[in-house]
Image (cartoon, rainbow, N blue to C red; front, side, top):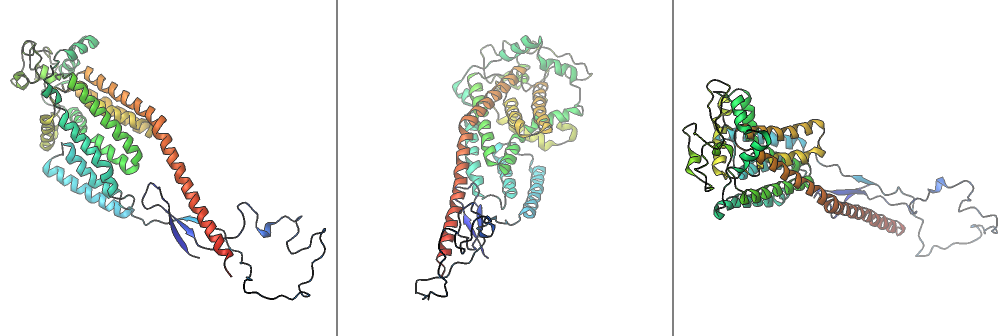
Length: 443
């Protein structure tokens, strides 16, 4: 008995095939019981019926074997469809992933953590290629990720549109809203009560959370791509939607972050400039600044709001991480505070992973979004108003995605899956018919 492969068109994976038994097929319809399972009350084909005259004996009738006469085909087993046993690539994938992890660790140690998005995605691409050896064609990596990267590069090129348009920068909007919600500026309150002269151990966690924004969303996207390309495409669409809608937001309403407002007075920004010289002042406390005076509860702490998102890395002495943060902050739009994309992208990640993880995963992803919010407010990167707008943007994008997925995408995939199953059934029926015809034609 031989086994051959029957390729199935329209399959999602390139290596998908059916191995089909080439043994002759028994000539009977589907559902008909075999001859040896016929009911006892039905006469056999070679026994005369009660209402028919007995047939003449074959001994009395001479037979002549003609040229077209053929012997009956012997009974054979029905067609059998079995799955092809694929080659085991697990050891190879694990070995390649180990080599990739070591190479990435050495690269980060010598060159610093990749702060720009393109370099990080290139690094992740090698890991994705190693994780899918024997499971997926490498061309799929370029087909999926190249448009994603190009769209995000377009985002990078257009995020300074507000500067080109010379839109007025809002310096008082967010701090006024925060004071209306809390009665005080929450960044001022947090730095007054928590900030110390030298960074405590927990500021390492704060700095790690802030820095993780440049890595975690893309690393999660890479894992989703390795596990399920369809899920990855949905996440990529949500990611791009949040990014570009945020771009529209801070293009139309550019706003200064808390650390910049703490360096300027209301008179210095009365004409709503986007790049006043006071933003770059590092001489210490500024009298009558927009945020007001900080009254520290810990001796030696600076009595003013300062940007401390990288301060925790000084505790562990990782200057390469601080260098990466400084590079990323230098390339960013300094007045793109409304809405906070740090908050928006971490929240869309939490919402997207909520139905796809259990309680532990849900706790981790949602806790990550809240930890990011605390880090942004405490380190003077964003106001609470900015974070709420980022969360609202993420919620709106996720709700839209769920509606579109339920009404358009999911039914389309269901139709495609049904067509694929019909193609498989049709292929098996064709094989069955061909084997039946061949069996009948055997002399």
